[in-house]
Amino acid sequence: MTAINKQLLELSEDVYANPDLQPNRLCQRWHRLCEQYLPVKFEDSIWRHSCKSKHREPLQGWKLHISATILDACDLFERVASFLSSENVQFKAPKSLDDLSGLNCGLQNGYHQVGKFITIYPDSEAHALCLAARLHELTKDFFPVLIPFDEQYAPDSSVFYRYGGFSIIEGKDEDGNTFPAIKNPADELVLDDRLKAVPEWLSNPFPNAGKPSEKTFEGTPLGTTYKIFSAITQRGKGGTYEAIDINGGQPRLCIVKEGRRNGEIAWNGQDGYALVENEFNVLKILKMQYAPVPQVFDSFEIYGNFYFAMEYVEGKSLHEILQPRQRRFSILQVLNFALEISRIIENIHQSGWVWNDCKPANLIVGLDKSLRPIDFEGAYPIGETDPFDWKTRGFSKSHQNSGTAVDIYALGAVIYFFLTGRLYDMGEIISIKKLRRNVPSKLIEITEKLLSESGLNIFEVKNELQEILAELNKNVEIRTK
Image (cartoon, rainbow, N blue to C red; front, side):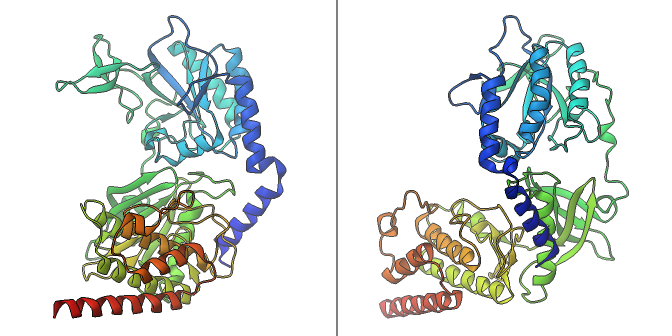
């Protein structure tokens, strides 16, 4: 068992051994806190509010945010809720811990929403400064989730702030398009820029004004060795970046992955740091046994987050190739891809690992047209219990499905997706025959078997796919004579 997997497994056991940290208990506790402190709710909104909007309250001003993980949310909220209520200030928070998890993920609601657990609307600048100071003291025992684009009240503080609209104000540009707006000192409607905490026309009154910008990468590997120039993905758990490795005579393209401490923390305690560190450790071992996985170069920690640099795999993912197409892959293309993916999974399994994230976005078609697998954050050794609370919708069966069966099911889900253009949904199963005509019956049978049966052997699946492909090629040859 790798050190990181052992650590996560022990942490998971600790979390579920403590009744107060069980997901159901925390969710029920959060519901009770909402009923007590956030009685106002609206349909089609993830937010609950402490009170309804007051007459003549400000339309814009300094907004305070307090960040928290799903594991800390109840404790932190209990620490601050009675104080906020006593201050007669309006505040809001998500209606469920699942909604908080979605916010901290940064995909469904936008990356700028990461960490925004409690939002507070002070009635003046002076009030904002007073509240921020007190809230910082109340929450200093908690480890923060960093909020992108907000300013942090102090280093390691769970309190953040930005200037913006309290209510929805819309402006219109020259083309008649609407945008979220605030008013500048000239009483003009200007963009309420979610990517900037302090408008250029406004002075920052908080004690830390200017200090957060002093946190640079100077003197770290991201300042001396790896020059990041583009973000490929950006979400709560971390980012994936294109960079240039200048640590040698000839600069080369590379990928830098970032795992954030407390980023998208799950019910079992794992966070972005743990996932990315795990991938680095897996790739170091797996590369020695299976060459097509990316080569790792270096790892390092900066400001509490884990980073590693690895080979840039040139090409496009199967997801990128399929996305702009007006038509699905041909049956022959689907079979060729399915066979190649089965060989990849077979090699990973023979090397002693469960990939645990087989999907089109993680399969790169290289310049030589062969497929290369990427993204091994959730990989773990065969024979161990899956230590990761990490599943991709449409390509994972359930949290009970583990071991090599995870990858075999994912292969079936990938084939289904290539054939039909739809994600496989166990709650609403639609047969391949209903979605696409002229699919060979043997291909339908093996796809359904991959999606429904456990205990399948990838070697046998690969051989069956080879037979179907050989038969299809033979039929095509006969028809073309």
